[in-house]
Length: 386
Image (cartoon, rainbow, N blue to C red; front, side, top):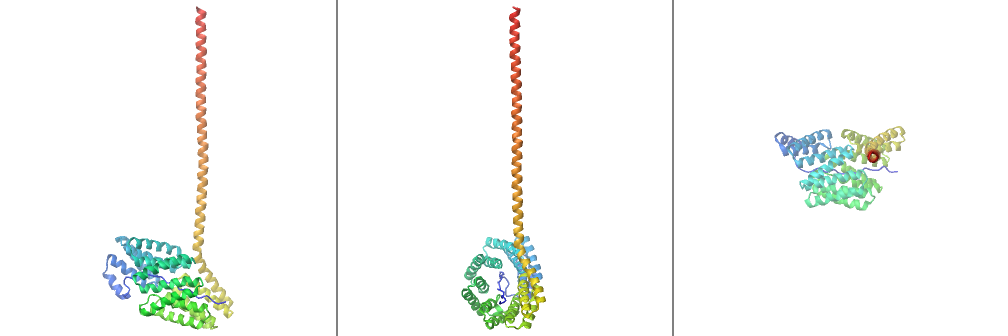
């Protein structure tokens, strides 16, 4: 049975200072204030998110705080999106989705089409990870429509690749390859140094599924070179894993295992649960092919841990729903009981009122009877005296 290669979902960030290097951004940051400072901090986040995610998080948190203080909606929307990317990369999908939706609301409020396109794409990646491909495609297509109208070629590479990923996941390889080739054409026109995204991995996946390992390997190796040139450690981890998978299929087991550990080192540094899940599963299968049952088992356990980390969120949501349903049911029962108690109290009160009325009426009747008897007796005595 073939080891499955990993689909490379592409995350977008809004462009602002795309042509600036880190040193230049640091210099601008020292002399910037207000909205400009927010923008520079969010751009620094983008430079570090694929290599030093914790540092990236610090920058976008600083941007977030300043944006709130000065009511910078665009900067706040970018910060929400950046935080969403951070949590998505670490496998906290519910939190990521919540942040993306807040970002989308703000970008929509200020009519920022770049932002709306970016967040639509990123929401699509969440649905893809949850295997809700209809919703994923809906958001990817909306992102593509906006980016195409804006002529944003760099982000179109990512958007087209993600649309292709959906069709690939549905085993519609011919449609997928059409989108990948469109992405590749733009990618090659822009040149590696001007590219933010890499469509090569996903083209390699198609060839891998078709059993054409040489062509798959060619694309994976080109992808690795591209990711190294752009210093994207996430991309490098994916590419190394996919090359290792091909080597494993070609019975180059020692090379395959060595590459897995290189990918594992990067993924651990990045703290990325989705990538770690892929690597541990692939490494377990690689060891299994060599007959090393012990290491195959150990890595399978690590894979299960990562899998549980990602799936427990859905379980947590279900538990929360059940708890809410239980609380609502309990509340309904309490209300029903209260109604019954109120009905009993009302009935008792009504009975009490009736009893009082009866007693009063009885007293009136008795007093009337006594008065009548007294009057009759008095009249009788008066006639007797006459």
